Amino acid sequence: MSHPTLARRLLLAAPFLVGLASLPLAPQDPTAPLPRPGKLLGAKACAECHEDEARAIAAAHHRDVVTGADTIGCETCHGPGEAHGSDRDNDPKKITHPRKLAVATQHLLCEGCHQDQARAHRGDPGGFAQAGKGCAHCHKVHAATAKSPPHAGVSFPARRAMAAKARPIGAAACVACHPRRDELLAASHHASLAAGSEPKGCETCHGPGSLHAETNGIARLITRPDRALDGIETCRDCHDEVDPVEFHWRGKRKPLLGPGLSCTTCHEIHAPRAAAPAPRVDRHSGEPAVPATNALCATCHGLAFAPQDRPLPAALGPRDAEKILNRGHAALAGTIHARLGAPDTPLAQGCGACHAGAEAHARAGGRRGLVDSLRGADARHTLAVCGSCHQDDRALLHVRAGSHFRKDVSCTACHTPGAPAGREAMRRDAEKNCTVCHGEVQAEFARPNHHPVPEGRMACSDCHQPHSARPKLRDLQLREDACVSCHREYRGPFVYAHQASRSDGCVACHVPHGSSNRRMLQHSNPQQSCLQCHGDFPAFHDQTAGAVFTNCLNCHSQVHGSNHNRYLLR
Image (cartoon, rainbow, N blue to C red; front, side):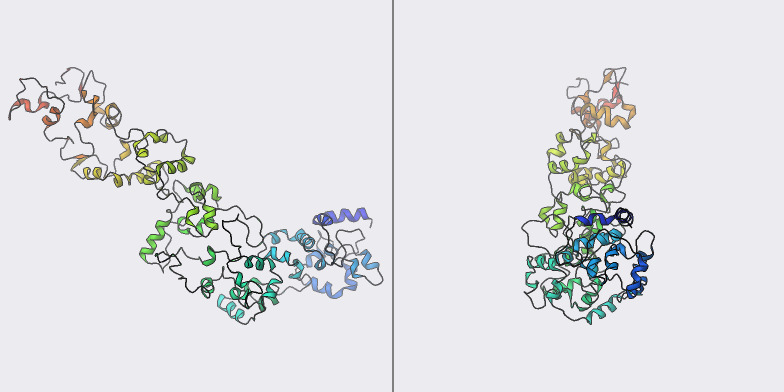
């Protein structure tokens, strides 16, 4: 087969080999490079000399490589066999041995078919590369496929029993595959556990490692305190002063953060000491992490994203449960901020849209000073945060000139972030907080005659505009807009208007929130209301007890306005 034909065959069958030409081989690798020119012999020619390997691979995971239509048999991984097969001594240096390739070259070769598996590979890929461990150091290509790994389908107690049979191997054996983890540990708060510094070293936290090492790194045969159900107890072996329920908040009672959390939820063990939080990177590979999402917040504040009827952990008492619920918002699903609350929403567009510094707060293990909780924030700050999304809301056009803003009443003093969706539901949620500041108004509504606000047929905002520069209703606005929107029989304009509209409008005579008078007048006797403004009545208006003039409405019956008589007579 000509070299150009060979090149085309390699490009069609294994395009990943193209990038290998630019990767230098390690000087100690006594093996042929890839790609290279040469004639393809085929799998049958290879099997003539390598019968045992042919039988083994036929029973292994890679049997399709030999028989598949998209591959070129053994030479997919070992390269063209012409030089090796034609040599009298079958020189092994004239054929490629993937296990002897440089680690970067070996990874590229394997990722040609296993790109998805390589991307999802867990463990310590960065450490393996630093230790010179490639794919073939753990994965046996020519090994027969086992029916079941020794750990598969084993219950957690049984697996612990298996781990109990393991024996210590020493930190030096661990560092042979995980040098990077040891370097990070040596620069961390746990430097005393790094290799050479502590007799038990890595196995202090991870347990005896013989089974893990003998099985080429099966993860479930080594202890991972950050994933184990009893991970807190592993940490308390050294930190017995920490209370697993109260944690370590210096004597202040705090409840559990929620189910499924451990010490390592906040504390990074293999992380260098740092004066400030470092950029988020993947703890295994050292590469930049996937952009943070709301799920990062849900790790500790999970109840904020759960359904409202989600049961609390049975171990928590009612007071602890109340504290947990008060730590976060109600479930955001179905609320006005539902689009911000989905766990897969990017953090900057979700929780971080309101709580600046949320990611740094999470990286630092929950350090409160790094996140803007908005709790206790003044009106100017909360308006800036809320206004980043609600800046086009016409209702907020004059909010800065309003009395609420000038008296430092913040947005969150009235509005609950987890309020139900819908304008009407949101309004009613906000108005539950009106009486927090306006307790005297709540007392007025307890009087026998009142507008039906307590009954839910009216709301405060039917009359008052809380975001307006004039939340109190006075003058023509009161008469022409608010009151007469319901009391249409008193809507003007009148030829002869009652001059009360020049002062306080309807509230000059009426108490809008509640009164003992059936017509909600300020005085039970209408005469007292009239005399507040009309002290200059004519002399013949006898005001002695029993006189007809003591009831002004006997004559001036058109008190709201008249189109016929300037004195508002009937």
